[in-house]
View 1 (cartoon, rainbow, N blue to C red):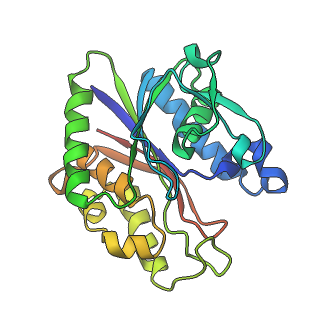
View 2 (cartoon, one colour):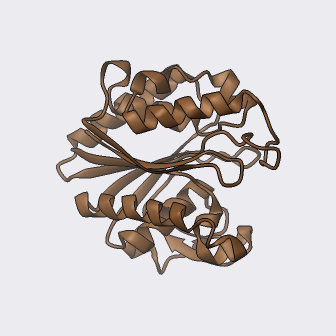
Length: 246
């Protein structure tokens, strides 16, 4: 049975060793992400994480809890694992970023937990996200042990002139709509995110957000309770940390 869902962004700067001088600037974001991860760990020890595959890299559909990875590709060899039993296994230098972030949060906030990571292609159609989310909810509810969901996804990366995707004047309104939907548990608003527009403004987490909506019943459903712990765009990328309860 699904007990709780949390959502966090995927910047490597969450990891203090990678943040350098920006560690203080990202402290509130980091503390919020660790807080929701800790609460997931209190609810259960079995997690499913949903993320979006990085464009330009080989597509990986799933990363199992037996896997370990490293942030060496981002500048520092910080090693992480998706379960307590995986800490001694061979390190995968190509572990996807969403899996690395999920593994780091687990290790810091809920070390007894184990995570399996499912990755979506950035251009996954909304209809397919709806099917995947509904199937995932059935799967989680069918399990005898309590289950948690962790969504690792970013907002638009075009919110300022110095943003990774440069500035796009359309992104502010779309990001505001996304933030409101996450804060209020509005599945319908997530379902209405336009895939083409999101792609053009660098809102690469769109497929993960629409899958989250489907897990909670889509437009006809929604969480019993929603909560935001952090909303911001410190580097021109929309970051949102929060929780939904079924």
